[in-house]
Length: 205
Image (cartoon, rainbow, N blue to C red; front, top):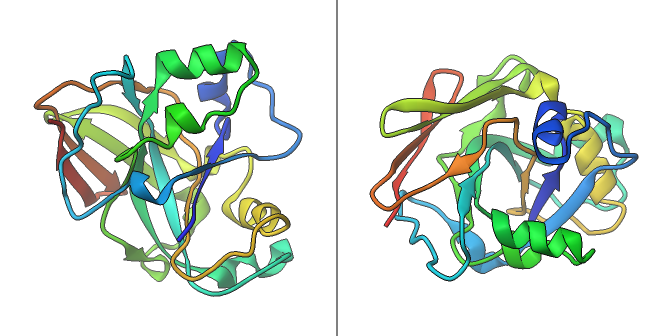
C-alpha cells in the first residue's frame, strides 16, 4: 500500500504558509511511509521530539484498481470511496527542511501521521468536487473546506501521480488541506466530517 499526498492544493492555505496565492505549475506530491497510517479510531501519540505538531484536515480517496499513466478523463474509474483524514505535520521541522531545500518526509511521514476515517462509497455524494468537510476539536469547529476550492481536482491528481507510480488497489491519496491548520495537544478529541456525516474520531495522547 502506498500513501500519496498533495501539498499546496488550496490557495488560501498557500497564502497562510507562503504569503502567496500562486498555483503550482504541477501538483506537489509527497509520500508517507506505510507505518504512518492510523485508523480504526486508534489514538495518535504526539511525538515529543518533533516540536509543534499541526493537524491538516483533508479529503482522502481510496484507489480501487490497478492503473498506470491514466488519462484524466478515465481517472474517476480508479477510486471508489472517500473519507476525511489528518495529515499531521511537524511544522517547525518542515520549516527547517524547506529552508534547506530538503524533502518533507521527516516532517510528514512519521509514525501515525496519516490518520484516516471510515470509508464512504463515492456514490453517496452527488459531486466529489463540491464536497464540504470540517474538523472539530473538543466540540469546536477548527478547520473547514470545500473540494470546489482545490487548485488541482481529484482526477487531475490521480492522472498526474499515475505518470510516475503504478497505482494499486488499496493505495490512498490525501488531496490537500484548506487554511486553518493548528496545533494538537494531549487529550484533544478530534472528529472529522464529510458534509454532515461523521467519519473520523480519535484522541491525542
